[in-house]
Length: 116
Image 1 (cartoon, rainbow, N blue to C red):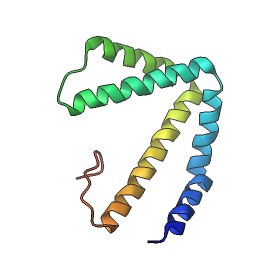
Image 2: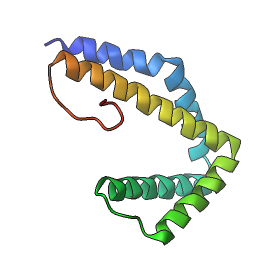
Image 3: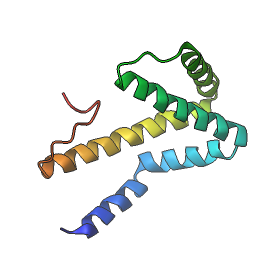
């Protein structure tokens, strides 16, 4: 196996416009400690809610309300909103790349949102 191609792919990702935008916005939003803390809580709560949903359970109402409140606050800030959208685009691109690689290796790895 040639790992130099994987390193080249990593370099291509870092040089991509999508990554450059994401990285710039990430640096900007993480420069404000309050925003950084809110984003950390938002992501933690988002992951917990997703895990609850995947387990077929209903999330506690207070968690849902907290998540909705954080979403409202964060998405009201244009820079934070742009950052979260750029992060989603990066996650989707990386998921697409992973799907291509796993298919090439003939691996059957279920990936939520990509199977169909």
